[in-house]
Amino acid sequence: MPLLEPRPTPSAQMRLWSPLIAIGLTLLVGSLLFLSLGKDPIEAFGVFFIQPLSSGNGWSELMVKAGPLILIAQGLAIGFRARIYNIGAEGQLIAGALAGGGVAIACDGIDAWWVLPLMVVAGAIGGALWGAIPALLRTRFNAQETLTTLMLAYVASFALSYMVNGPWRDPEGMNFPQSIMFGDPALFSPWFEGMRVNASILIAAVASVGFWIFTSRSFLAYQLTVGGLAPAAARYAGFSADRTVWISLLLSGLTAGIAGVGEVAGPVGQLNLNISPGYGFAAIIVAYLGRLNAIGIVLAGLLMALLYLGGEAAQVALQLPAAITGLFQGMLLFFLLGADVFVDYRLRPRPKPVIA
Image 1: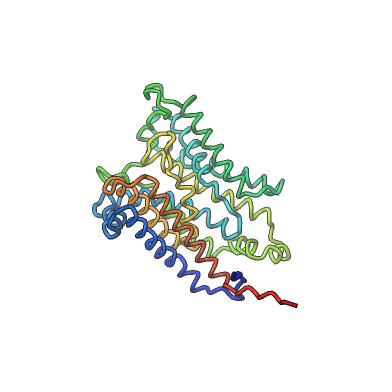
Image 2: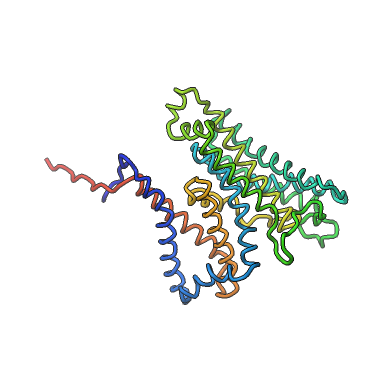
């Protein structure tokens, strides 16, 4: 059986091609999946990728779903470049939504322009503080952030459930686990009549530009990257490993928290148990599919948003289960990781045993 050995110099060109290879393999396996379900692959892919964009409302929904994915992925990419693996952005999104939603509930009935900006600030702080917990555990107790961030996502989910079932439950909500509907001062106003796209998409656009400037012009970003690629060299140069952890987790928590406010002050309009369809986890795929590059993340975010829309359309038009979206996301990540393995490694025949 062949072995994997590291390539002396991994191809930078193939690293850029690997997302396209992963997409192609996902489409190929998806075709086989549709055939096994008795569906015409061409018709199915038309429903997935063409039908959702056949109207202005479809493009609006694409922007609504791409915004939080891009915003969260930009923050995650900073940490991933430094080999700080925050996989609990879903929890930081919920923490930001709770903080921003708490401001909206406290300011209910106040008609002032500052309510929405205050919600965004509160959400950013809430998400950053939720990211600070695994940063403290990593720097103080050497607890791996991969586990702590994931576990804290469940804690945040339980906290949300407690608040909307208890202190913040709408007394007129027919006993459903949800808060009151937020007033107009606490909402992003839709840009077009009958569509949900709103100014929250601008936050993702500004974050993408800021991330590009930060990664291409900032010495701090260089320190973070060196700390991830060559920890020994970073220590020799005097770069602080603890600072790398704190910056990575605080920034990724901050962007996820803002994304949470964008949801509760935008399409959702309240706190409930379904404020996110898993954006925090899907953003991990977006970050890697975009090669941790600002422009690539924008393109990957649009593709992932299209998968969400396509999955919803397939449920209606093709009577497929809701899990079809997660299945395509999983295949995309699987093939992307597999392609990256062969960028960094090559197959080498196992040496034959020497018989004395």
